[in-house]
Amino acid sequence: MPIGRGSDAYSNPAIMQGQIAPAPYIDRYQQLFGASGLTPQMVSATINFANIGYLWQLADLLDEVREYDAHLASVMSKRETAVAGADWDVVAENPKDDYAASIADWVKRELKSVRGLHHAWSHLMSGTYYGHAVCEQIWLPVNGKLRLVECIPLHPRRFAYAALTDWRLYLWDQVGNDRQPRLGMFPGIALDEFPAGKFVSHQPRVRGGY
Image (tube, rainbow, N blue to C red; front, side, top):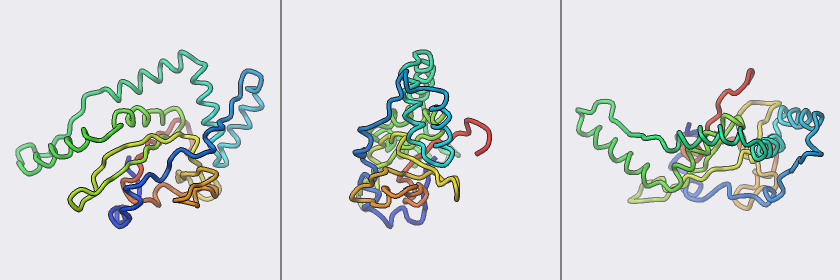
């Protein structure tokens, strides 16, 4: 689902056009548990760490489990590719309304021109595994209006929850970047603080509670 403040969508063209979340330096050092480090105690500590909002260690663990469990990888790949490769359409609520039908056709053409769209759909389906999946959308001005041109998947380790205050999903890169210094301060920046349409997320309920 697209998230953000709708009233700010066009008042921040620089944010909409540039990439807010390029891959951070810290992502080069994902934690590898390995056979010797993957103990019940380590798994419990990782889950407890995630319960207070720090998700990067859990994401690294889930990555490693998927890489070593061929059956899990197969099941997830089938689900992701089935959705990404499915036929889709944009249909006007009232097909007899010529204006509405023309708008639906325009939206369909625009979506088909978005770079990385099918890859993004596949990535968003991984939310059923990690509990969240997010893509950043890049917009460019065309004839005075912003046009969606690219959809970029973001790794689930780059997000956090401010578990002591709320359950909003935050973008947190630990070391931050030049464009958004707040990304380096836990818990980062809540996705709904960005203009509407900058990020699209899938946050399914995969277990009880929140």
